[in-house]
Image (cartoon, rainbow, N blue to C red; front, side, top):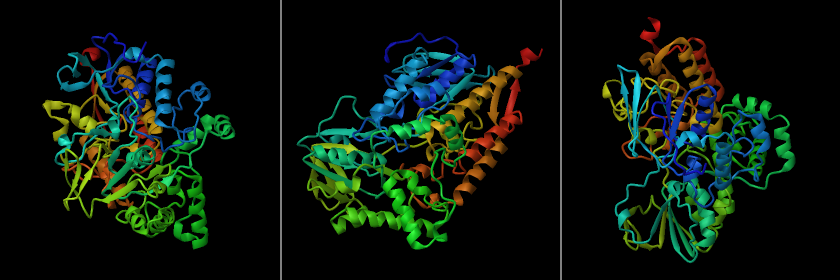
Length: 546
């Protein structure tokens, strides 16, 4: 079946799954194996989720390829071969399609279809789900596999629609190639997508102007073709390595250090940072065990990276502007790059400091700054990120018990029990939702854990004649208190990051992911399940009981 071929929607499946990224694909597979009927709705023309949409130049995963794949099937993980240490978007998308074909998942996916509403029927204990294609389904379970980084957002800048050149967003990149040869290009935003795209675009554009509000820390990947010996090392004990990774805080098998940064002499500390820098990738942040909890320790890592920036960027004033000083390293998503800082040594690349001269508005010719300087450009790229973790959920805005919309329930910030369920929304499960480790981890590890737990829960309900499961209010309150308490023990809340919702005007400032780690979180989920789903309210099928 081709990726956009239409399928017949079953009139009454057991489950509706929203999204066909890595979460939706594995959910369909597990549901089928467990004997449930399911239909997934996907607004794209194909599978892949974030890797379908984020096709911008330089898009690449910051988790090593050997770990950024499913671990549930030994034959699959042995058969697939990655070409690079850190895989690029095209290869990851090929992998997603390979999985969908190998597991014959497309027959349960309706592409180019968006879920427009979901309403809970309390009397029937069913969800009514509607799509923009006119579908209306009545299902027992609703699974939101909508992704944490899938609701792309434009900045609130006046005049965006007035620009007469080409406009792009890194999270909604065209499928056909974009050629910037000979163009004057503006990139607005220097988060992960901007940092990855800027070096590639600079090689094409006649002039590239980077508009930076907040500089971010970035570590070079030193990416290279996959080393056969390294691949074989992983595959010789893939299952064992996967299991060890699940015991790590981030779900990534790293070379950890059991020492604090200030427990060693400066020379040893610097040597360890240097070793991590040369190895490349975000494992730099586990160079010592206290970099996200101890401000003084964090300062040593931040200063090391700032010194690297200064040594790389030849213009001292430019290096100073690119060196972050307003947040501890790692408390915003640390980036992994391929020649980002070196790009600013190119004669065709300029940096505009938006803190000194903010953008006044976009005009037909380009970007007008607050000092009335006009930067004429032919194309504008918005690398301005997402309404993270909640945006895709609130866009659908399910209505739970009593017709209460999710946006109202989450008006002061998202609230969940275990990141899986929300009070007032029975039989609705969220994969990698707020209140779970999600974006602080290897997402596929977290996805697999959530999917397994959800399907096991549904199977348990079927065996025991339960038709309704809902998070209990006290359990949810305690979990959110724990989530906040653990976050306060770290440096993360010191940064105005998208983890806090700080990139979206008017969004409540709460730390959304759970930072207690994958192993601790998994134990909390397993404990609830073993205790007959403690923390959840269950309703049995009265008809079956009679």
